Length: 171
Image 1: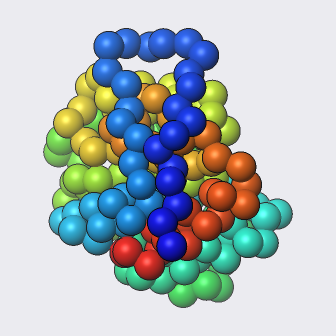
Image 2: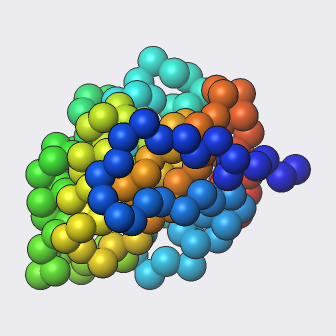
């Protein structure tokens, strides 16, 4: 199975000279699996979506630390995953500090990936990370996030879920 997540990358406004490169789910999964210190940033968009919540927990159970933003922390309670609550804007501020030791005090992260956020919130966070850090950011959201380093394109819900399955297979 090869879901093409690189086609529809239409954007409606621009925020700078660098735009995300489209990425396929298998490549994104392999990049996360090879990262030294990955971090999954989860937004409240997964809350109330049983399928998306299930896939998020599967990813987290692969040993990837989770920054739970908004009210997404409620889906991780009792799930035996490494999830910690933090405000997404505060997290972006901390990620810009090279001396920050991370949510677990083990050192800075090198690859950050995002799932379950409102597009307009996440684009602002990614804009700051793009312009003021050297972090790799990967959006596995349903919508193209032009301020990420790499991003899935704009996907229908069912295609997004297939892409997440392929992403998970390659972690």
